[in-house]
Image (tube, rainbow, N blue to C red; front, side, top):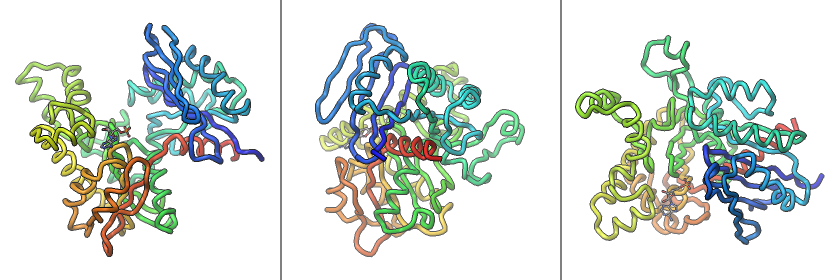
Length: 395
Ligand code: AMP
């Protein structure tokens, strides 16, 4: 059977990220983004075999953008597209694995929207547009939350009255599941271990950041909760704060919910601490030049990350390794070394040269000789979504 092609789609409220994945190739055949959808400056940008190109698509909505994309995808796939895999942020408790999309699955994704009011409706826009444009193609939903449905109850319940959980779904769900799953499998391969018989700590550090404890291929705890705001300090998200901060700000500054949500989601984290940027590259440069805010932001980021990893270690029977992934995890020797320096009690220590070598897509082991494994593993959520889609087509 010739190698199959899967189109992977990740829809936001005004953007569509896409990648055409061929099961036999590690590089994407085609990838890109349609941005500013619904606006006069909507644009489709793509990359194919090292060549970049773009097309203005004024006022295009999701469906119009996808229909512009269709000939590009068909051309790159040689007319042979086998399925579409959609990233869906929230699958609630209903979805513990990827699902072939049908009317019931669509309805369940819609019903989960109160848990992810910004993300699931946007994901649905993409799915509905793709179903109209490609009615005969198998389409699969892959959920960010699904991997974490193996959390034990003591890890996913908040210390709140039971009715809030039973009647309103208030519990910890976790996100970034596709990435944590992908990198933990790759880490087991790199270490010559079976993923079904090994234990990992994983740190996904991109614009959003989370940690995960993975035992025998299953998520046992993770730092994000009901929403992706819980846990680590991130690009613009605060991560954990005192839950009374809401009422404190309301009482003392008269802020309403919308203002507080904007603060915690868009004005905090690295950006809020540094007063400069949410981009780790800029912060590292500013720190080198003595910028106090950038220096503090990096210190807080690494210390809180280390604290979260230490907390996650409670869920492991043993430690086969710590995994760094995501834009920061894959590219910042500084963040990796500062974080590991706080984890001496776990026995962790880095080899300076190996740590410096693993950047820009280079994977590898970076621990000092005789210390527990620390691996840099580039994530590839699109490939994992394509593999899940293919597995359902085969199943
Ligand atoms: P992601 O969301 O996975 O694309 O990651 C985005 C984050 O990765 C941003 O904070 C970037 O600043 C960070 N990043 C990308 N390249 C580097 C680099 N060379 N050094 C430090 N941070 C980086």
